[in-house]
Length: 310
Image 1: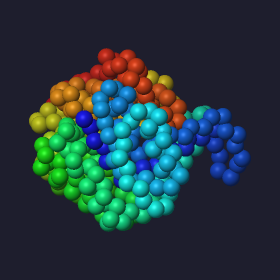
Image 2: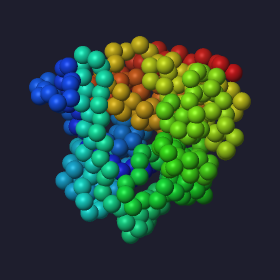
Image 3: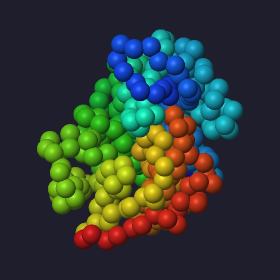
């Protein structure tokens, strides 16, 4: 069983246009509307890969109802605490000609202490049956940056392995609680260590710095360049299969889903790295904010290359 915690879910709307330009009127060729939020994406793809998952978090307003309805239609279990306001609507304008996207992310509804207490009461009984907890994404207004660290500490008390995928202060504080695995992208890793990481050697050094703080596995995702994984005294690079890139939205979350599924199955770190890379590539193949399919993940799995660097 995988539990995911998404404190600031969203509805992602992706608009496909040609020759995007500021201040101009555009005709939309396609549009997509999907439930979103890092942990929610992890639960959706984990479920597609045959691993039971329950999504926890906060939802608000009509956008929240839409999010929950889609999860129900997909058969993904969820337990959300309702809060006043409106769940975020995030918009991405994707230019087909340049294969680039411009995103607009809302801040989300305000969450109060009573809502945080209710969420903790709801999720606690599930920990004994949980093999992996994924805490991921941004904080909505009113939530302290230390919340992820609190949940990681709670998971430690039940022997549950945790994956942390966040940014900024929530990531820094979460690392102090010693999660099992973190999965920043390159930009997030640079912000975490406070410097640019221009090459593979610098990424490895940064990963080992974080490991020294008590994180067992550090995986830095770098899009088409693959991912660097540091575990114990060894470092690997995962090279994804060549696919037609249609959107990067959700690819990092899909990688986390693959990692979480592999951990839940008690597979090796290398097997998890391979599955996560295949899952990320499968999602990059589809337009908009749509996630990859299980069939595509399985098809790409054997095409992922893993090379030992250290």
